[in-house]
Image (cartoon, rainbow, N blue to C red; front, side, top):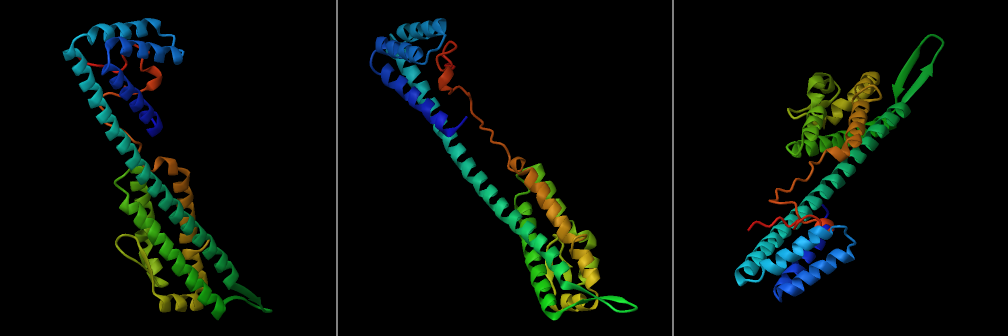
Length: 273
């Protein structure tokens, strides 16, 4: 049920209150007219409701009881609307942050792979083929690796912070923290991994690794390494983005405020006398 429909229902209930504050006959006429204008094929239900209000509100006690019930239900609906608005804001904030962080990680992962390719230069001699990495290319790679590490950490922390919201988010938090299993290999090239799976770059050690064994660094972080895994994990998360944030479940006493069926089945308001 949307906020708009709930507000519409509140308006209808308020109108009933206004009519019951006048005379029982005018309330009955108003409800009968509402049923006709809505083109409902519920003549028997409308007759029942008309008779109920025409006869049931002949005493001040019965009228007061009905008004009290409607007032209570209006108060309940206000709480429901507030809950819907709060849910909508939190869901929008989550979706916005997820979109921003996942987009940044995917972009940095792809850029890192591109930079590895650009940095590798093959020189062929008569007897050997060697791979070297130029000074400028090394600096660019270090910058790209640091950018990737920052975005990876941001995504990991986001899932960790929201892991209690749903099982899907909890699973993603665990997935993005699995860098710990390969922490020794990453540490050997200058990428430290803490207990939560976050990455930190030792720039001097990383520079030395890129200059002395660039193939090893690329294997660990490039197209067959962490950046590729991160891109796949991010795509998987995006594919289930509509199932990450939990569904709304309002704990209302009665889900009776449906204006289209308000007069459709023997007082849908579900009053208890």
